[in-house]
Length: 154
Image 1 (cartoon, rainbow, N blue to C red):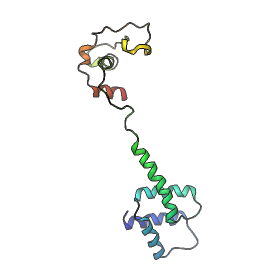
Image 2 (cartoon, one colour):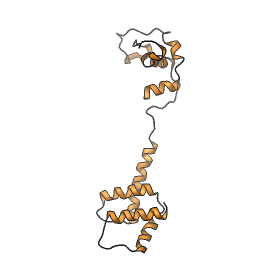
Image 3 (tube, rainbow, N blue to C red):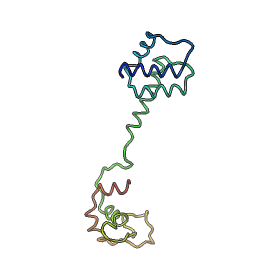
Image 4 (spheres, rainbow, N blue to C red):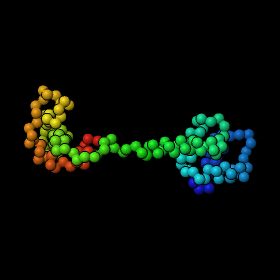
């Protein structure tokens, strides 16, 4: 962070934990210099976290512990996958047929078709009529893998 940002964070620390003795310019500069090598946004969150836990004004070393925790939280959030599903394999033809019949039917000027596909196995009721092997085949050829993923993941 810049020197100005470190002075701002130092001011936050002083206002969060007021004491009977005011700091002089040298003490302010020393504290600010100790913070300067850290990221300003993360350190600001660290000060807020420290405020919830500490009853006294923390040293730079103590504040560093809160900083490390905040940085770890941010890293964990950044490493989370952005989608629910990992698109590793090509979408099978029967799944594209299923998506066309269930969700994209209007796009092809047809009614929704809820017949079961043999590939659904135990996930479909055996009482439901079976989908013929060539039904929705032409439509499925116009459904891309990307469109299937967008349809299924919202």
